[in-house]
Length: 332
Image 1: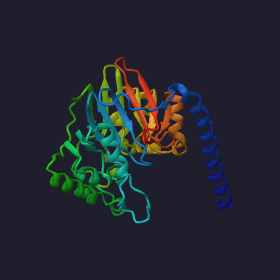
Image 2 (image 1 turned 45 degrees about the vertical axis):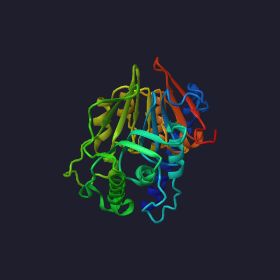
Image 3 (image 1 turned 135 degrees about the vertical axis):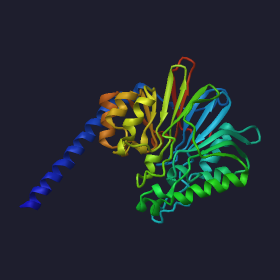
Image 4 (image 1 turned 45 degrees about the horizontal axis):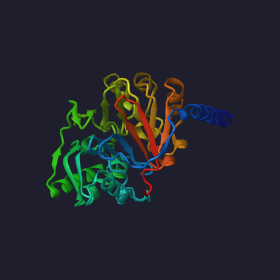
């Protein structure tokens, strides 16, 4: 009898989630056309203020461009994933080729004002070794938050080997002689026309077993009345989103935390940030129903996926308006 009751309860919950997912997808479609996307032509590269969300599958690689200056936040999935069963193709060539295409000179030589590893999961930091070692790419400053193995959950450490990923990045930077900063600044600084500020910058060795996503560094970009927040894999586990939300404030654009999964993008964060548009580095169908619900019903946010759109560029004009273009990973 108990098994029968449990089965009924589980089936009811699953059916409710399914219905909620259908409702939120329908509502999302209603709002999704707020920003119509056209194909990227790269006519204005080098002088515009843009955020390039590359299509690297279910991983993050974001190129920031502002008035001739460039920076890279995360590197996409690498080819040597420590999870033996992952069987994931790396995107090192995709990211390095894109950097040279957009930020490179006539000889394909590119200079990045900075790179930031938001955290050391391989789908965010796995491509950095190849990018750093590419002789055609110069990095002025590398922000790599110090990693403390004592903070990790043991199962996560065994699967992801964040300690190895961190050391590989540090060794690659030292080999190239690039300036490396492990104490990440929380004070705003400028790059081109953007003001940039990092959040969740402190690493406390006493925070044991909190998980690597809670170490993620978020990045806020502002230009005049425009603001964007790139949430890396920040989630609300242990209340992190709730603590950061009032510090971040209202934004126009949100890069969804943790690929749109259930533990991120909670109600408090959305009510505070109220983004007009959101980008997710995942398939739209993989965003969890509760995340879709918050974006649709609370903030009426239009949500776009780098996978479906084959990469997205958000261009910010001088009045703070946004223009979205896609197919950025295609040959042009």
